[in-house]
Length: 471
Image (tube, rainbow, N blue to C red; front, side, top):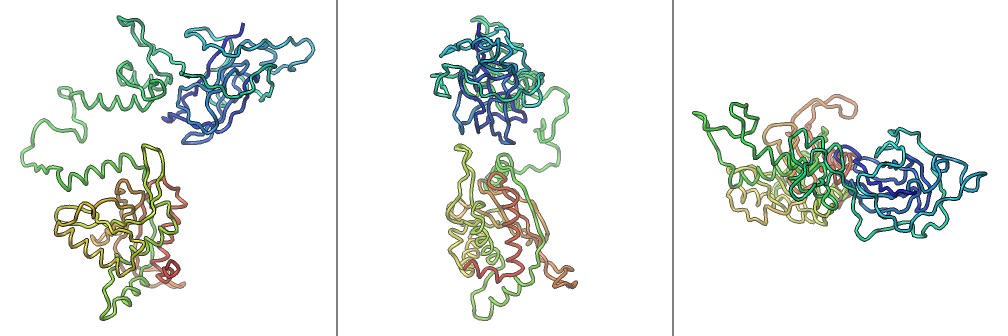
């Protein structure tokens, strides 16, 4: 008698909690062998073919191509024992001499009862290459009478949930914990975490690795330090130390601290840098600042270079909507620049910087800087920036790896311009050299885009005439 078994998306490792179905490799009604790949999925790491640990007839598929499936959600159901073992294991196929007729498969199989013994000899939910049986060749054997619709979606598909070994019997009966991954259970045991107290965020309350890690963090914050135990770095001490000075993280400093912490916590940033010969840029600025002409600041020239670079690489003028899991590319460049004041670091924002000339940029930067130092910047002048220019060279330093101004995706850092030996036109010369660093959110682009942006900025610093192409 055929036994219907449900195969769910296994834990693919490295904390991955979901995958996207790229391509189905089997059809409903097809005979599959143990450890035969049935679906190709894409995770945050790679494309993976997922093998099924059961041999038999595919009775249902769950999810269309392009759908996102959480770990523990059903992928396929397989009728084990619906066909003879020699057909499942690679026999001569239907119609072969002496081969019996296939056993009909129920049209609407019921899920297997919890605790039933396996009717096959597979290796469990494993990835390709890690099974106990050899990799079987793919078959396209469809049983007669198989349904035409290759994807069956039940009204309420629910993942098969196994009980944790440590789950006790409560007064109202035995409780099964909604956790599938052995890794999740092991992490919980190592931290003495009762899985009954964890609320699962996965499908139908499935407990994911992120749920357990979040519960562990909350538990450690609530537990008081043991008597005599060493205090971990960053933990509050029992009382004040004589002579110490405590500065409240409030107001502007507190808001900056929170933003820095959130940026480091949420944004996977990366930094690249390059040295550039700024001699020609300084010469261009001197030419612009002829007697009687409006003064143009060096920061304004760098701002103009940034807007030109963002026009070439618009993917960097963006943010990430974590709720919708979308990259949002923004139409206008609202350029922030770091300004140090007596009250702390602030980042005024030049609105629509891409539409301003160098002279207009210089005037607006000067106005916002004066307002920042006087403490008269409005909230609108300090918010909704899309890209930040950070000139830390004014502090006499060459390089930096700054923290991104959350929720922006990129920041250009500029070090001091100093006379250094440089190979110019094939000969060693003393030139005015600057180090440029570029920090970016790795979710919005790869290194090629970031490197292209930074290289274009460096080229414009070395040859300001390139900006004429952007006019």
